[in-house]
Image (cartoon, rainbow, N blue to C red):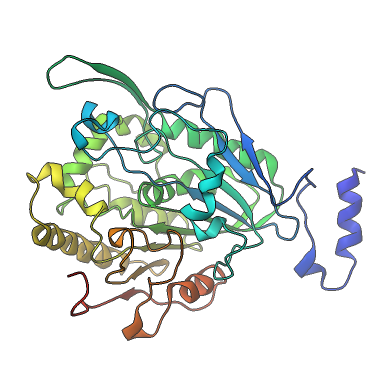
Length: 375
């Protein structure tokens, strides 16, 4: 019998075995970041893709966090030219990229006592493909005057597919698996949840928390952006790998499709009603750069479409506070959960997330406008 198998027997025979046993194989190091590079995974500039793992010796639970960082679909956005909002890390990832992890998400910070995953295993999935971790295209983008051009690899789907297979090869026991991320990482979490949930065979209970990357129904104001990225990132080529029930003419259908495929999992979205970042990506370039009040009106309309859709499934939840004076009210979980509470309903995001992943009763929350906030 392998050494780690003998250790399992010893631990399982002790007091409170159900609370303390570790059934995954032992590792050389715990609570340190380890770089993983897999063959045939790339960033936007075709450099080597890499992700990071941080092993726990006190828990078999796993959190997978997708990194945020915008999106791109043409020369200006994929290069950052002319100040157009673009995507993070287009020129690749340094070996110490893991140092951003605890700032990107409290779920990756073992020192954050408000997080339910302080002693969990961490997999940090960086972002460098400009396609919310889900593209399947190599694009040639030319500048408007044809004076310059780039080849850009929107190969997020292939990267996540290989990360998923790697996780599956490393873990033998995962009581709880939480898949999350904010912004582009939130979209990456929801779009890739089907892949991870089916591909990581050791995962017993699944949880999804899409932070500030809502996939709104395409019938609303997000429709033009959905049609643009569908073409730019060759999403149709992946249609056979999506859950039954996903209709690419309505990308918002991914919400109910996942709820139907995994009826015993808990699936949630969280974002601010006054998000002044993701809303710009969603509408600015498609509606001739409207003023903020119009942007917020469109965002509110799409929000109400989404909450109505979530109300049709018992395992879909939302937590939508109004405003936070941090990061343009974008990402409820970036840096800290603090300030993302809904005071008039006497609920904090930290407590809500703890209850969510511990299978306690939770309700969906949508905060009413707060006079004087977001001046």
